[in-house]
Image (cartoon, rainbow, N blue to C red; front, side):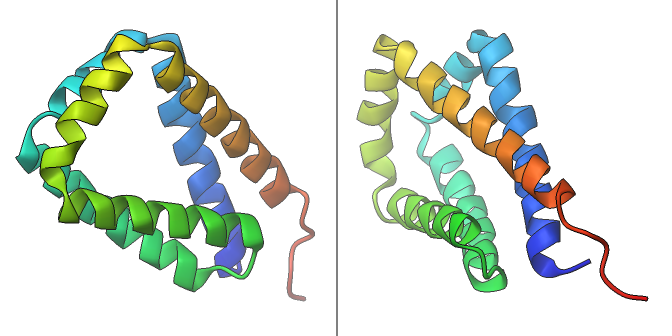
Amino acid sequence: MSTDLFLLKFWGWLLTLVCGTYILRPSICKQILTMMEDDRFVLVTGWFSLILGVGTAVGSCRAPLKLLGIAFTVSGLLRLSFPDRMAPVSRFLKERPYIPLLISLTGFLIGIYFIVAAGNHPPQGS
């Protein structure tokens, strides 16, 4: 399996499951936003986002995957550079629950698209 197909399936299932959970259980999203007020949590998620983003941006040839990797890389760099700025952003999003819901719905649809795109490729080899 090529790297692009692996990344499509990985990000497709990850986005679908995580964003689907946020859509079905908005209280979990509110808990995550509360945890984002802690600088240590922001730093850990920043490193995680940076590693996943760089790995995806470097390992993919497809434009949607490369854009997703760049977005996660920038997000990770911002979290690592300005962890104290995430608390006001988190409070802003908690006051407006429709914004995280729309972001989750968009991520869910992108995840479904990635899963379908990964399934539409014929097997290579033989």
